[in-house]
Amino acid sequence: MGLRSTALRAVSGTLYHSGLLGPVTRAVTYTKSRPRLPILTFHRVNDDHDPFMPSLPTAVFAGRMAHIARHYAVLPVEELALRLRQGRAPRNALALTFDDGYRDNLTHVAPILKRLGLPATIFLVTGFIGTPNALWVDRVAMAFKIATARRVVVGHGRMLPLGTVRERLLALDAALAHLKRVPNEDRLPAVDHLISALHPGAPERPKRLMLSWDEVGALRGLGFSIGAHTVTHPILSRLAPAQAWEEIQGSKAAIEKALGEPVSAFAYPSGGVGDYNATVKELVRAAGFSCAVTTRRGLNDRDTSALELRRGGPWELHLPTYALKLAYYSATGA
Ligand SMILES: [Zn+2]
Image (cartoon, rainbow, N blue to C red; front, side, top):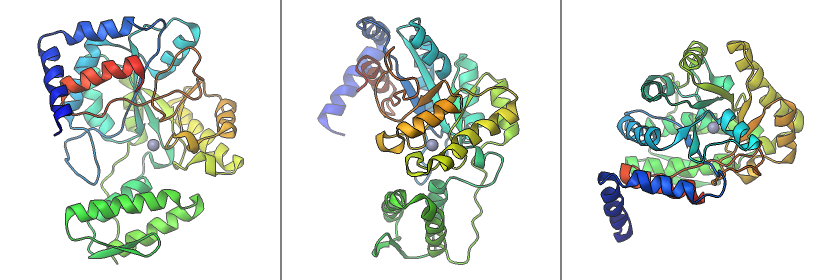
């Protein structure tokens, strides 16, 4: 750990344990001349400690949520967007969002949020809900974890060793970076090819990672809001408009059919600047969504497009440092 992060830990620890972090957090809130609000992103929360499938440990997540429950007004993302537009959002409001629809959102996240009375939004990749299938990134990660091959060729002829866990993780990173650049229609065949090179002859037997529709219904019953995140998780800017429409509208229709109520929040897959464009944004509007979240860091105010909401948050396991960084993020968006 560097000197700077050691010092930060010491300062944040002192603030946190002396009870001063609350007043600091509130002071930060009131430096804002008008509400500028964070939307936080989460994926998996569990205690698998699996380096191939990174997740937030349950106890770390529970600590964060207890801090957030004490110092922030947590709103569902749809309501946060609406209240911003109407100019009646609390200055200390924020929203919690979970992407993709992992099963641990029910088994590990829901009990903690329920106990604290915090709302959250889960964005589903509907083509995977209720199936044993996993997103291509997870299939690739799993294949590197259980690979029987001693080395593998990634991309354009680079041969990478698979001896140690560290080598496997490095090779996995290289493979994911390469596959993200492969055109959409070529990606799944390339994934299949890579997986069979990693463990020739062995069928994939993933444990069920994603929620079932019954479990989605249970989460809705617990007060979660359910948003759409496409059918198959493609990069929408790389699709023809007709295909992008199928993905956007198709995921909305699937959730509405399952829950019997309208869905108004959308999350762009990958969600960076180049991952959606003006055409995609228009399609999201035409499908009837009232808000959509990106993965561009920053805060949201009255002038932020409701279809291009900023999202992010600190990455930090040490709770006092997380709490201080969250106060800083909610003040500056950086
Ligand atoms: Zn996603």
